[in-house]
Length: 367
Image (cartoon, rainbow, N blue to C red; front, side, top):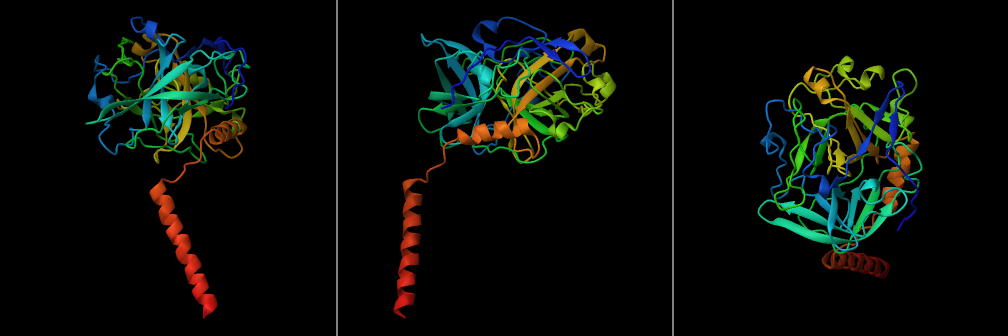
């Protein structure tokens, strides 16, 4: 397992546009549940104040594409659940999530974890973990934007058979409709009201919606703009905003980039909040392009006035040719995913096939 840890603090995001904005990692702390903060707006529907809005509820019936997305509970040395994130199943025993869910950059912040799988009609299946792998280089920057904010967790036993397994995306991942899904908190676009998603009990639900990544950033917070670089190869953090209007000039942060203009006019658009850390961004073929890392809204009242102050970033884990950050993370994940071993019955069929081929070869030689 990979275990290098270095000092890290969530200090500031320095954008290419010259803005300076505070960033917040999005792991959800148990003690946070009763509190509100203006960096937790995650739902675009201005007509609803209910976190239970069915528009955002993932259907997890048998065979659902969402059934490999897990609710992660992290525990301290005394066994108490102290925080939660979201993860995605990659193999029988490996789960993809964010590095900041398990490390503060210098040491592990959790000694154990439980992965909670869910399927309608079957309920929750809890499996305890057995190890962590954190990407080398995580914590080397003082910015909350870190191209290495990715981790692979290992389960102590195989995931339930109903859980879907996901693979990593290959090729361009920008300017495509992307599904975001997580167990974190919810709110609505007008008021910024926060409601706990019950992440730490059996009433937890998976929220889902869409958005689009439009540019990339490097560790430390320097992002590609329309003027200085090609975003496809610039950095290993996928960057977008939460604007619904689809107009770049409506973005308090993104209007200087020349990107960030792909908002959705309907209420499907979502973004991340506490508890969504480590959740995946899925392309149309359900391959994973990134891992939820950070998000920030500058001012809730700006949203009411028609402005957009929310931006968010996912650590790129896709196999993107020419993008060193994405490639490095892709390689790290693949190196920490165990090769699937066929079931005994499958091995028997393979053996029968090989025996048949050998027998046929002997007959040909005899002839």
